[in-house]
Image (cartoon, rainbow, N blue to C red):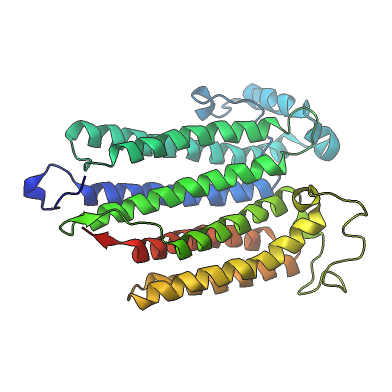
Amino acid sequence: MLQPSPDFMTRARPLALARWLFAVAALIVAMVVVGGITRLTESGLSIVEWKPITGAIPPLTTADWQAAFDAYKRIPEYEAFNRGMTLSGFQAIFFWEYLHRLLGRVIGIAFAAPLAWFWAKGYIPAGYKSRLVALLALGGLQGAIGWWMVASGLSVRTDVSHIRLMVHLLTALFILAGMVWTALDLVQLRRPFAAPARLAPVAGVALILLFTQIGFGALTAGLNAGHAFNSWPLMGDRLFPAGGLPAGAGSGELVNNPIVVQFVHRWLAFVAAAGLLTLAWRAGRIGSRTGLAVVALVVVQIGLGVTTLLTGVRIEIAVWHQFNAALLLIAAVAAAHAIGRRTA
């Protein structure tokens, strides 16, 4: 339903809702960054139980810490890599996983509580309730996906499934994109008779390429594929190393072979960049500055990717790489929204 936006004609408060969604989006970006640190520091399996409510309270006594440490000692990762770890060493990896889960809880409250209040007050514009409920449901699903990912590393594997890690990251970024798009739609309601933006084909292609590239980034992290070759632009002394693809290998190599995954992540970046630069050009044609942000962030992202490789995946650079990817997604969504705006 299309509606004019003057506040005296409706109780809806679209700008208030937009500010709230932007704030939650910022929390999601922080969550993505902490998740990246958690993966890079091999901290993700330090908490072996899923307690959505009581898990918000960390170990408070020495006995509590020892019990948590003893539980960690029973999983394959400890036996394979951390046998002999001290309690203080365990506390260091526990911190990042705990912070990651705590941020998830904070995001859930920061979304659900204001949503209930806006709903009760009648501040949600017509046509947006279902969209906000869908975002809430996706947030709940993301929590379940997070545990599904962790559970994959508790019995047989010595780390989490890289496929599940990719699903976990892409779901988080899909929620982020949906939240930013919805907030931008709400901002537009200050214009009389504004209608929700549509996703233009060029924007859809650019965003699909970006999500695919980020997905391969998650696979690269999950397989530790960034350590396979730390040279650029060649992998060793070849574009693709000899023996990197075993004879008779099937399509599974595309997501399971660290060398193949690193190769794809290296060069798909430029295909995604071409799509994003086309999107930026289209946004610039209509006078939107979002295109400039996309161009700048694409350049920074490629530079950070190369630097991550050349430094042997230094944690601080790899984390900036993931942080910039989230910013790039936000800029791309804003540019896509700009060229998809319409007035009824």
